[in-house]
Length: 130
Image (cartoon, rainbow, N blue to C red; front, side, top):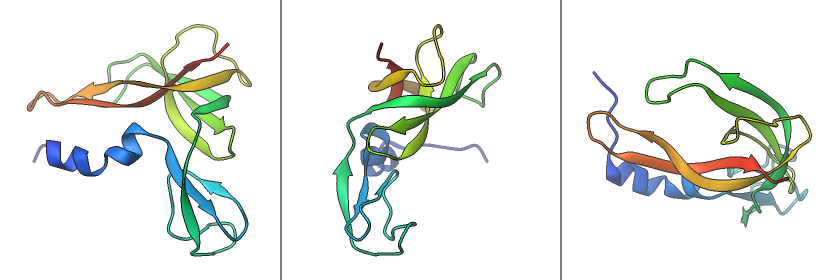
């Protein structure tokens, strides 16, 4: 059975896909992305939502030449350490000049388009800031 997406499903998960909202532990102060209900550092259940700035630096990256269905290669994926602490994996829109340690910033871009429904999915990607 083919995977099917729906507008209502994407509407429900939009906060995690369209913004960088995570959690900050009120116990130890650690920031997490995506948000958690229990802190992985100290096991506290006292967490508050936090909006991350979208700025960070590249810790590692790779170029994908043959992507999964719906993702046309080649494209770049990086591990990004946000300025507030969490590390996330995300696509980098730039093709040239990628280096470990370079500064990046979040941008809103098209991710993919569903073949059957024609539903276009958008989300957070990153671009070089320098």
